[in-house]
Structures are given as C-alpha cells and as structure tokens.
Length: 327
Length: 309
Ligand SMILES: [Zn+2]
Ligand SMILES: [Zn+2]
Image (cartoon, rainbow over all chains, first blue to last red; front, side, top):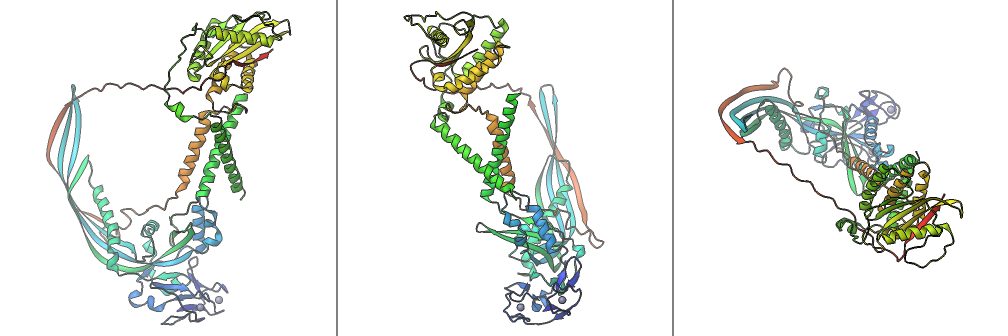
C-alpha cells in the first residue's frame, strides 16, 4: 500500500516536524488517500519489481520513488503493537551528525559532506520490549576492618558478617532490537527511548521511511533484554550493601519472570559511509537525536595534523627563543 | 577551506626540514647515539698537565670572587664538553714574544704574536682533557694592552683536539663576538659567555659549516609531546556512550512495584585480631649519571682565531 496525494497524485510522507502526512510535491497536508494492495511483488504505480528482502516492510520504489508499505508485513502477527514515530527530521539528524563529527580533524571531509549525509536512511527498527518481575537473592560474607597501634605493635581487627538481601524490581519495556543487521552495541548506545511517546501503530507513520519486521520471534531475543535487566538489578542490590571493606558472595541468583512482551517499531536514522574498504555506521536515535557510531579516521590527515602541530610548536619555540635571546 | 592547504604545506615543510636536518647530522657524523649512550664517563685522563689552574688573570680585570665563580663555571663545562677550558688575560705587549724552545721568527702582525702566545701557553702547560699532547680543549688569550703597532687590543682563541675538529672559523668568530659584546663593560660576563657559548657549540649537534643554531632539548620535546597528544586525542573517535543505567527500565508506575526490599539483614558472625610489629623501612640509595663520549682528536696543529678592539 501507499499514500497518494489527492491533489497531485504524489507520494505522501509522514512529517516528524508536523506530525501529519505531507505531500513533498504540492506541499499539501493531510490530503492523502490510502491505496491498498495486498500482494506486492511489483510497484503498484510503475510496475517495477519491489526489492523487499526477507525482512523489509517499507521502502521506496527504486524506479518511480513511491513510498511503499508492504501490507502483509504490517498485519496479523507482524502488526506492531506500538510505535514511536520519528520525532526528529532527517535535516536535524544530518545536522547533529555534522555537529558531532564535523570539527574532528582526522575525519575525511566527505564524511560530513551534506550530499553524502542526505543519503541517511530513516528506518523503523523492530524491537521486542520485555517486562520482567525480577528478584535477586543474595547471600555473602562481609568484612569490616579496624586498625590501631599500641606501642610499636599494629593491631588489625577483622569482623565477619552474614549479608542477606532479597530485592524485587519490576522492569518495564526492556528493549531488544530484533534486527540482525543493526549492530547491537550501537543500538544499546542510542538508548534510551522515551516510551511515554509510544502510540498505537498506524502504517501512516511509516510513509516515507524504511521499515523492517522482527527477524526472529521474541523468545530468541530474551537473552538480550534479560542481560540488561539482570545487570540493573545486580547494581541495585549491590547498592543496598554498605559499610564493608570486602563482600564475598556465597550465592547470588536472579529470578526474572517475563510478564509481558510487545512488538514495537522504534525510529532510527542510519548513516553508512564507506572508507578504505570498510563500512562505517552511524546511528541516530530518531526520537531523541542521540548519536552512536564510529567515524573513519584518515591516516594521511592524522599524519598531516600531527606533523604540522610539531612544526608549529617547534617554530613557535624557536621564535620565542630568538626573541628572548635578543632581550 | 584554505587552512587545510596551509597545514599540508606546513607539514610538508616540517618533514623536509627534518629530513634535511637528519641527513646533515648523520652525514657530518654529529649524530652518534650509540657512542654517546654506551661509553661511560672516564673523567679527565690527562696526567701530563702541570697545573690545576684555568683562570690566569694576569691583567687583573677580574675580582677574586669573579675568578672563583669562573673556575666553578669552567669546571662544570669541562665535564660537559670533555674539554679543558682555559682563560688567560694579559696586559703587556707581545711584539717581541718568542715561543719557548723555538728559534726566533719575527712575526708580521699582532694577530700572529698573540696566537703564538696562546698556542704556546697551551703547549707548555700540557693542557688537554684527554691528554697533554694535542688534547681536547680551548684557550682564550685576551690582551688588554693596546699594541702601538696598530693601536688595538688583541684576543685569540686557540683550539686543540676535539675543539679544533669541532670549531670552524665561523664558530670561533661567534664565540669571540659573544666575548666582545660585554668585554668593555663587564669582563666577567664576557668570559663567562666564552665558557657557556663554547660549551653550547660543543654539545649541540649543529653543522659546522652552517650557522650555529643551538637547539635545546625542550624545543624539540615540547612540540613532540604536543603533537603526540593531538594525535592520541583525535586518532580514534569514541563509538558512543551508554546512557542507560540501572534506573532506566524500572517500572515506577502505579501498577509496578519499583524497587522492593523483601529481605535485608547483616548478622555479625565472628571477629579476629592480628598484630604485627611495626618495622621502619630504611631509605634506599640514589643512582649515578653518565656523560657523553668524545670525538677523536683531529689534526696536528692548533686551530684558532682572533679578534681585536
Ligand atoms: Zn500533492
Ligand atoms: Zn514504482
């Protein structure tokens, strides 16, 4: 399916700035009609074949530029329960990448060229959100140490305590991205999302963006979300233990009951730049604008700046030295 | 933007200068890391020298205190340069000076007279850091007597051994220029700069034929550290930062229970006390230093140069 402009027949897109469907051709707002088509091997507008891949749910027709949404990939078991629509625009994402990397001297300049940056891809990434009721049971031995001197003797008193904690924590919306092509570390770095802005899913939000369906079922991503929840409760439990020089755990286990799971789409801008035979990915949180990713560094630029710094410093000191000698 | 081109030019220029400098230092044999690092300081090895004195103030232009200060300065720089550094001041005509043990050769100009005196003074006292025969070192002879022959006072710097090899006409002129800068107003300062400037030239790696650019270690080290810091800072950009913490996912809504402490206790088990006699540690000793090597002695005769005022 796609959204067609009633005025000019153009392909409508969702505008994060205005939260409306927008026609880039005639600048009309909320003037779209949904053109439904269940089976989509070819573009309904121009008839060119649609390359959706295994997981693609929304893309632009490579031939005519129509923004397409694959209906059978947003329905039934693939229908997301919730979505956080894009809140920042492509221009804002580009600007924040440029702000982050533009001033760094070793980064090749084309990396922050406007033209290259406009190739940034806005994609709705599939996520499983898991809720956990977790309980950590901790037992261990704590040591307190007191030292004093008497005469020329030093005394050291070690007291041993049994430490027992049982801490319950309810976790909400612990995310695990269900897209295998997205780097897990980077996806963790653009977190957190503000789930208060999560709304019921509507395919309108996907118009003009790319989208993916969950690559694998929820159960296969539990390990990702469990790791995050377990790490959090461990820290919370540790914080309740004070006053010991050393704490040695004797048993420590976490029960986590998954009480809810949701399939949601979260907005991400992805910028890929190829340099020196390697792909460099930058991710931007489409809701908050937070950036993660590594920019390429150019050996040539690095050498140039390093040597030039040395030369400048050297010249400066020589100059200062000769001035000082004249005085 | 143009500053990138400017930086490129600067980097290329720096590289070229470094390469040229390196090529020159290596080709002129001034760069000899292994010798310098490995050869231990043998100290002064001359056993033939007839005197401990270095400051012969016959003209009496220096106070006793100044002489003492100068001796100290010389001792310090002799160690640094591995050269004997001698100063002779005079107040007499050398027109009829005849070197000891040689037959009388009438000499044409006052320059020749004072040169003969300086070289002879060196030879007869068997100066030289390493040996008394053509050993390493310099001698400055400064005659405060105005020769009627040309109405001028004459000064001569006599070089021997490593100093002869190291100091060309250019360097000798530079040293004498330094001396003459203050000689009328402050002889002590003038003779001090003779010692320090000589030492600077002997210990710097600059090229004999070109102008003496004395490069101190910090002139190279500080920019190098700065450059490496710049490199380290910009080389790898951080991938990003984790900004979720243990509180991010906690459900604090009405239906969530947030954090609940279900059980918490700390029960005393037992304690034990150990004791230890306090041992006061003794301080350790320090290490020694080592100096540079020496350059093998050059030609047969003295080198030198003179100025007059
Ligand atoms: Zn339109
Ligand atoms: Zn098409």
